[in-house]
Amino acid sequence: MKAVSEYAPEDAALLCGVGRLVCAWTMMEQSLETKIAMMRQAMGDVRTVGTRNRPSMAKLMTELRTMVTMRDRRNATALNEISAIERDMQRVDRFRALIIGGFQEPAAGGFTCRDPRNQQVHVTLEQLDAEIVALEQMGQRLLEV
Image (cartoon, rainbow, N blue to C red; front, side, top):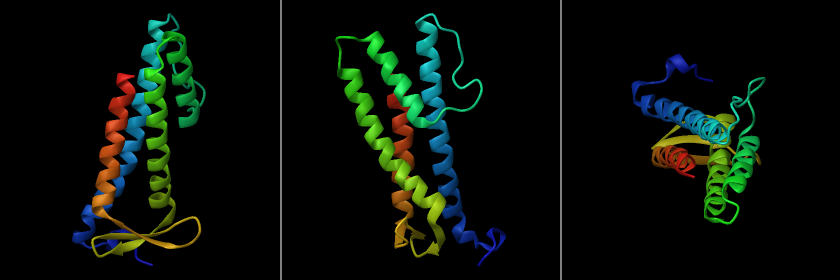
């Protein structure tokens, strides 16, 4: 078992990528909370999102869907976009869980992880970057709904 301080300089891209993935997810959550707060304020409700404890992503998406339904009763376009974002979000969340919960070690061109079925999976840095870009795009799409 290798300590994080022992990782070589060439592993910096890997460590940075994993950190960027975690930050991108958090930024997407914050984008969603911001969107809900803006919609609440526009509807006359001044409560803040998650005053006691931080709501889960599923609860935030449910609240967004409810508010969009109230706002656009006859327009299903926004609800279709929310459904598409949720599908993308679930895919990226599974990837994020694989990285965070199953990280094993650096490997050529990326790193290895263990999936929930304990099978070894090789993840490339390109895959990691693609998921980070997808998260950033989802955050923008959420703000546009």
